[in-house]
Amino acid sequence: MAQHWQEILPIDRYVVASEGLLHEYDRKVLTFLYQPLIGSTCLSLYMTLWAELEENRLWSESSTHHLLMNLMGMNLRDIYEARLKLEGIGLVKTYVKTGDDERSFIYELHPPLNPEQFFSDGMLNIYLFRKIGKNHFARLKRFFTDQQKPKENEFQDVTKAFQDVYTSATLGSMQYLQDVAGELKAEDEEQFIGRHEQKGIQIDVETFDFGLLMAGLNESLVPKKALTKKVKEVISNLSFLYNINPIEMKNLILDAIDPNNDIDVEDLRKAARNWYQFENNEQYPSLVERTQPPRYRVQAEEPKTQEELLVRSLETTSPIRVFKDASHGIEPSETELKIIEDMMSKKKLLPGVVNVLIQYVLLKADSKFTKNYVEQIASHWARKEVKTVKEAMELARSEHSKYLSWNEEKKTRKSSNKKPIRTELLPDWFDKETNKATEEQPKEKSPDIEARKREIEEMLKAIDD
Image (cartoon, rainbow, N blue to C red):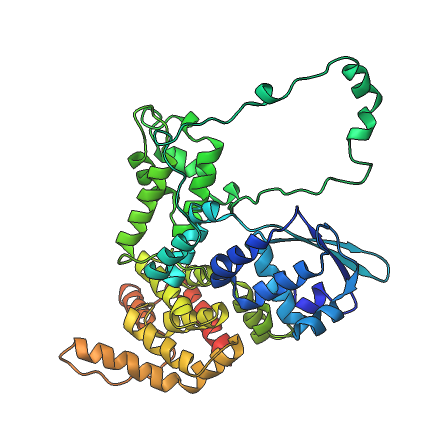
C-alpha cells in the first residue's frame, strides 16, 4: 500500500457530497453502533465532513486538506488512515481527479445502516457483540427498539383509503400532463434531494472458491440452482467472518438444506456461528486490521537494502499470509489462527509486529507455534509498547537469548532429562533432517536438504543482520 503522502497532500482540495440526506438519528447510530468498531478518530472525521454540508444540501464548498487538518487538530497521516477505515466499512466513497498541477477529491458520505439492518447484518453485529460484550449489546438493542403497536385484534383499522377521500377530475388532465411533462423532471445535471438506504457490508463473491465447493457437493443433495446470488453473498460473508474454507463450508451447507432442496440462509448463518464457537471456546470473531497501519510503517520511498525489503514485506502482508509462507505453504490450524487473533485483539499488537513474532517463533522454536510460548513473547512486546516492524526486529535481536531460554525451560519441564540451552540459530528439525540424510547417503548430501539449508540461512540472515 502506498504511503499517505503519495496519495494525498495538504494542498489537495476536496468537496463533501452526500448520497442522500443524513438525518439526526444517524448520529446516534454512528456513535453507539459504529464507533466501537471504527474508533473515535474515524467518527470525528465523518462528523466533521458532515458538518461541512449545509442543511438540506448534498454538496459542500471546496476546501483544502490543510484546513481539515486545522479543524480536527490532526496530521494528514491520521486523517488518511481514518478515511480508509470509513471507506472499508461503507460510510465513505472517495473519488479523485488528477490534473497537471493539482489533485482534487470528492468525499461522498453514505448513511449508516438503520438499527434493524445493523442488528441483523450478520457481520457488523457479530463484531460489535465481540467488542462490547453480551450485556452492553443487549442494552443497545433495547436503546434502538421500542414497543410494537397494539395487535390488530385489539383495535379496528378505520383508516379511509385514497379513493374514499379523493376523486379525480380527468377532464383535460392527460393533455395537461403532456404539456408539462418536461417540468416534472429534475433539470439536467441535477437530482432531487432524498435518501437512499445503505446496504450492508458485502465481501466480493470472487474471494471464495465456489468451484471447489461445488466439487465437494453432491448434485442430488444440493442442486446448483440452490446457490442463488443471495446465497453466494451470504457464503462469501460467512467465509470472511469465520475464516471458513470451502471444505468446511460444504458440511455447513448440508446442515442448512430445507425440504425443497433450497439453502436456508438463516440456518446457514446459525450453523456457521455454532461451528466457529465450538472451534474457539464459545468466542466470537473480532474485527482487526489486515495489515500494518500506514502511520506505523517505514517512511522510506523505495526499499534499497535487503532488510528494508523485508520490513516493507512484513508491513504490507497479512499475518495469515506470513504464517503460511513461513510454514512452506501450510495453512494455519484453527488453534494457531486463534493465537494470532488473540495477539491482535487481546495483546493489541499491530499486524506488522505480529508478523515479526510469527517469523521469529517459527524459525527459532523448531517450527512450533505453541500458545504459552507465543503469548509470553507477545506479552513482553505489549508491555514494551512495540508498534513498528523495526522495533519488533530490534527487540527480537536484543532479547534473543532470553527467548531461547524461555523455550528451553518449557522443554525441560516436559522432559525428565535436562538439556542445555541451545545457542545455534538453526531450528532443531533442520539438524535432525541433516543427520538422517547423512546416515542414508554417507557420501552425498541430499540436494533438497542443501537447498532448504540455504533458504533457512537466508531468512535468518535477513532477521539477524
